[in-house]
Image: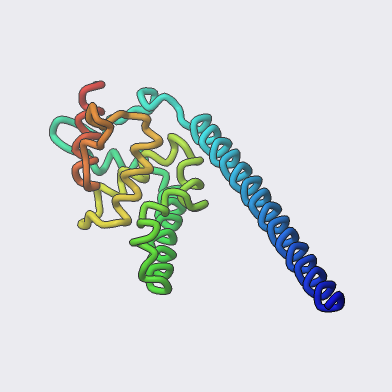
Length: 194
């Protein structure tokens, strides 16, 4: 009987030690996750500060290409940095391509995370970090595109963020839903500053 009792006590001791070890690993894992989350949050704050540092006062950027009669395309092309245009277009095209591939691999991704996760990508941050110099290329992409899809929406969102303009309602919702609507608001703002 003592032998059985000792085996039960030994078994219980081993079980308790395993539970303690498992809890210890879970606490360590959770602590590690918390540290990772904190590091990620700090990186987001640093990225936001870098973006803010790269934003210039949008009112200092002249927009003589936008007039009451529309966009002077010839003047716009003269004032457009085509190399930067290609760089920005390439970054945003890559975002759209990567997004499509990710959704193809995991169709539930859109339902689980939403496609707006593209605004957290390095490529998107690279465009924002260009700052004010990215504004005219982004505008040109939206203006010249016959579409108003994801690609153009990402461009509009980047231009919106860089410009610092507030196109939102009192409840915080945006006054635009498509890149075309954004362009209308942007043109109105530019013309109101002339």
